[in-house]
Image (tube, rainbow, N blue to C red; front, side):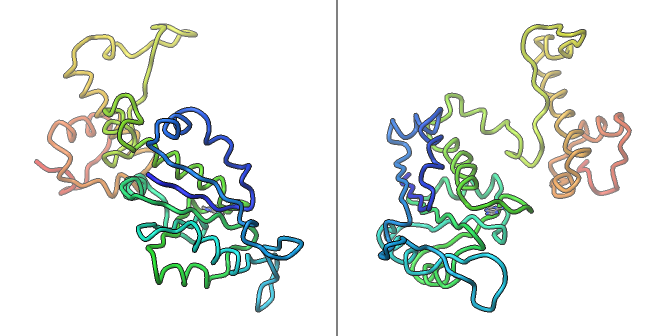
Length: 254
Ligand code: ADE
């Protein structure tokens, strides 16, 4: 996958040399370039911002450097990704969609954002996705790009040693993952649940499934409400009732 990042703070992206993203770059799975937006300024102060039309606080990023930057790094198959608090919430499903594309260009806004004409003009010639990490406001898109890239890169073929990690992890199938344990068996008077040491794969799978449902139900009622009822079988219903949860009629497939 080819990725271009445009930012006024290219140094923000130093962590992308590390760990598994660094390795994906070395092996060629991820062909990543970071560009300084000021490369496309032409005044002595290398200006990228100006005051907003209509008034109001803060500054807005001017369209000219952005237009030239996108002309320079865009390709016919590129998708523009603009992290922004007004974007569509970024999810695991969104990460899978982006991971399937050939070329992503990330535009990191700062200040009050980028002049809207940049996004509108880009949308005339390439797919554009404005994505939000959540309902809070960051200083700019740089950290959001690192988060999004991390979520995408781990989905690229060959990046994770064990591809099963992807199918069993939280959000893969609409439920949160069960808790995990390792050695020692006893630590500060807390024991690893017996079932996990039983060697009984059927019981272990049942326990993990129950934990997943209960965690999702209690921590993320929004996810639980979206969980398709046809994905719940009789054993699931029994486990939920035993844990003291009422299942509304029709919620659980027989
Ligand atoms: N830039 C500023 N705030 C943001 C957010 N919540 N998500 C993505 N990009 C942002």
